[in-house]
Amino acid sequence: MTIEIRTCIQNGCSVSYRTNAGRDTRALFFVHGLGADSRFYYKQLKYFSQYYRVIAIDLPGHGLSPCDHVPTLEDYSRALTGVIEMEEIESLVLIGHSMGGSICLDLFSRRTVPIDAMVLISTGASLSMVESFLDVSKNDFMTFYNNLLKQVFSKKGGLMTRMADKCATALNREVFSNNLAICRGIDHSGILHTVDIPVLVMGNKNDTLVPIETSAALARGIRDAEFAEFDSEGHIPFFENPDMFNDILLKFLNERFKMASISPEVSEILDK
Image (cartoon, rainbow, N blue to C red; front, side):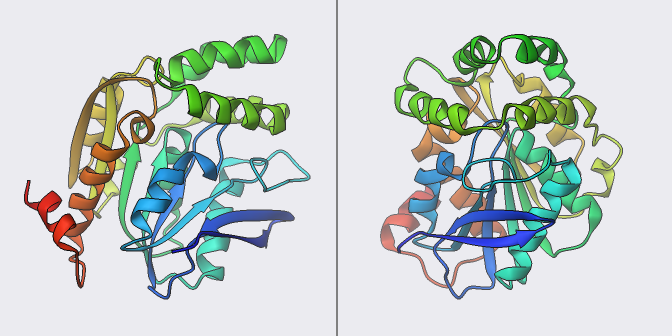
């Protein structure tokens, strides 16, 4: 199914997102992390659009979503809400990577939209580990960014690294630095006990940016959470191991929300 780009106006920002624009009122909603945009989920959009309605947002100040002010965490949650309302989504599965996972938890805590489940990737209840990045990012942004990429991607991250370079060129650096400050201030540990929906937490075993134990602790803090660990380097398991990531996510979705019909090929995956 064709992926198209749509926009909605939210809090003075033109928010862009990619979607297959299906009729299903349940959607998989992908939220990118710091310094990224919706293109990072291109393999997931292509794969899951076969079975679900999919949406991947460019957060305000990222990708194709220009913003005339430096957005806050609340602005990001409002942007998600605006897209959800515009697309008339009645229920959804939020899928967030790193800072995007924190945005998902923030939106859940507001209880403003119906959320069936969450998938939280390479993230934690707190992202205070970014503290050491703040001063460096302000003094020499590109040197900082290039060093950051070495932690985000493994040696096989060539294509994604080139994509990240394009994101960095277009990215508002004030927004990026502010995102680091947002991450530093995030602490969702006090709301984990209120999470009453299914949650899947994923992480890379050798992630040096958000240690695997940080993600494991997040899973332990949520009552109905599953935890999937990838034996990989890098910070983005859906790029490092896209096939395995997609299989695990598809199994989670099928177990929690039975699909009306699935192909024999998918049946084989689910039976493994």
